Amino acid sequence: MTIGIDKIGFATSQYVLKLQDLATARGVDPDKFNKGLLLEEISIAPLTEDIVTLAASAGNSILTEEEKQEIDMVIVATESGIDQSKAAAVFVHGLLGIQPFARSFEIKEACYGATAALHYAKLHVENSPKSKVLVLASDIAKYGINAPGEPTQGSGSIAMLITQNPRILSFNDDNVAQTRNINDFWRPNYSTTPFVNGVYSTQQYLDCLETNWEEYKKRYNWTLDDFVAVCFHLPYPKLALKGFRKILDKSLSQEKQELLQQHFDASIIYSNRVGNIYTGSLFLGLLSLLENADTLKAGDKIALYSYGSGAVSEFFSVQLVEGYEQYLDKERAQVLDRRKPLTVEEYEKVFYEEANLNPSGSTQFTGYEDQEYALIEIVEHHRYYSKVEK
Ligand code: HMG
Image (tube, rainbow, N blue to C red; front, side):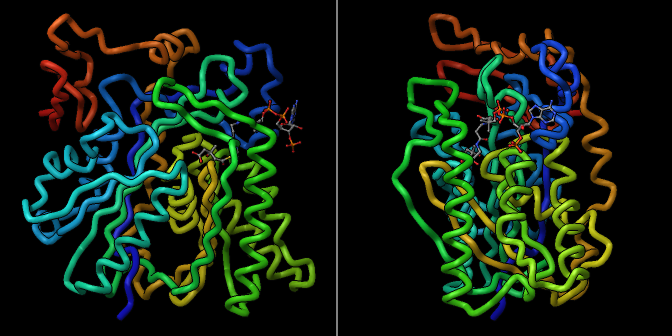
């Protein structure tokens, strides 16, 4: 039985900040962001958009009513959870109208969470072949005004439907995972923004990549020549480019090296306009590759490198299925074009917005008319979400 990604979708928030404007405001050469980090724009979310609304939009963009009745597990992978106890997946399950006899829960290990969720989903389908699992990788990356990571913020959600006989790609059984107890990036419960050892985090990302890749080659006897592309976790595309160059085997033919480079370039197109979406970042790269590369075909193998600070990393691969291109959206860039640009002043206002709860723990929100799903009110500390009627 083959198991893999049957459908994949994406949602991002309604606002965009152009990094040219941020550079000017911060007194930085714009080339540092555009060329130094390979980022042009980042998605910004207001209070009424959070990991629940983004996940619901991403999920709704791929699911039919029939599939909502067949899904028996909903997993939200996130590191920007909205409650310490109640899983975001429970809210999303309700908003999407998934049939009641399903397991819904949240999973966390920084940006690695969605990779763990996929593995769990695969084991579930192996055990129960008729099952369909909805995996949602949903995050809002907020580093802080003027923080070194500020230009690498972002927000978005990737939805993946995991089934047997998938229509887009199948998983190969070739995962190599690695855990290191390190302090490169973390966010204690009492802080709304992470603590970051920036340069150290990039060294760890690259070192985990190299060690996982060496171990992977030993265990599976595959080389880069067996793959048409490598997709990377994308905290910002430039770091992935460094990773790509580290593992690029110079003994490969010139033609193969160029193909891998072309596919790498296709994999960073969306991230360049969205920023870091933490758990979903690697899969946004995969989606970008599938929707922007012209030379892929059924049977092609794609390697993936997942990295979550803390740190857990994993190298694994997938294989394209006949007809996969029918389940993609080649016009997806329009979603990014539709975001409303914010001035730096407006972005800073959105950044600092907080729910203004009255003494009973309630507040109502406005200004969410253009969203598909919204956090509309908090009543006595209960969060209420709704699909926005148009
Ligand atoms: P920085 O201040 O931007 O660092 O911080 P920089 O001064 O090294 O500049 C960055 C690049 O821009 C350099 O290129 C400069 O040369 C270049 P490089 O040497 O690296 O090739 N540059 C220019 N290029 C052209 N024209 C110019 C110019 N000026 C400079 N005028 C840092 C970078 C990564 C520290 C910062 O962005 C940060 O703290 N980011 C957050 C942490 C992060 O993203 N870490 C990545 C690894 S950890 C990870 O991936 C996990 C994560 O996603 C979280 C999770 O798992 O949950 C973050």
